[in-house]
Image (cartoon, rainbow, N blue to C red; front, side, top):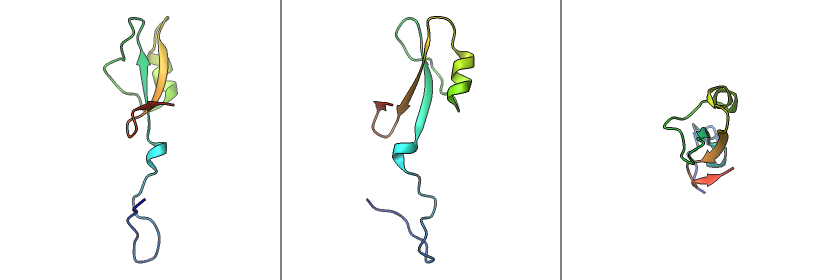
Length: 64
């Protein structure tokens, strides 16, 4: 895996793609809500009865 390394030997601005988790809400009709949420808590507050908060990774497009 290639990483940008500063002259000091530290990684500059690199984020592990496995940690890039998105949150959304699976609606009662089986579709994802048309928005993303900054946190699970925010998604839970937005979700209504019969809807489920989901976490996924956009890099690999897989559910977490």
